[in-house]
Amino acid sequence: MVHASPVAYSSTTAEASVPTPDIYEQIHKAEAGLANCLDTKNWDNLHNFMTQDVVYDNSAFGPGKGAVSTGLDQVITNTKNAFGDSMVSHSVTTALINFYNATSAHVITYLIFSKWDPTSLTDGNKTYRVYEKCDDNFVLDQGLWKLKYSKVTDMAPKFEQPYFGQ
Image: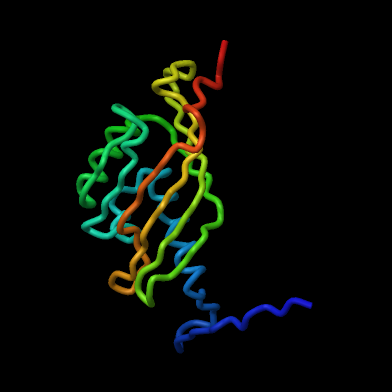
């Protein structure tokens, strides 16, 4: 028989008790929040999921699709340029989390990233799918778990492109 871990509860006088996520769930929520910000292009909220000095390295994807971005401002600029007006989706798996200490963790996540340019659905440079492995470091920053470093690699021999073939 499997027993669930106890759930911590927090409350204020103005609110009923609500569950407080454990440390693993906090990191899962940070990953999901990051994906949601990227997919909705909510650039102003990324500071809640990435540190100011974040390093995001998807340079393995090659020119036009990947780069090394250093600092939150550069990540936002490069991501805006890469996404443009395209629709994007991050389908994120459950992460493998190993803690370095109480305030930093090594996180490995596999995900499927899709990009669709509505004006170029058959152009493999603008509409494609990639299977990614994210080798990340998350840190506790101002009470929130945030991405500090990410090394992204392609797990397939090449991007799937295009998948709206004619």
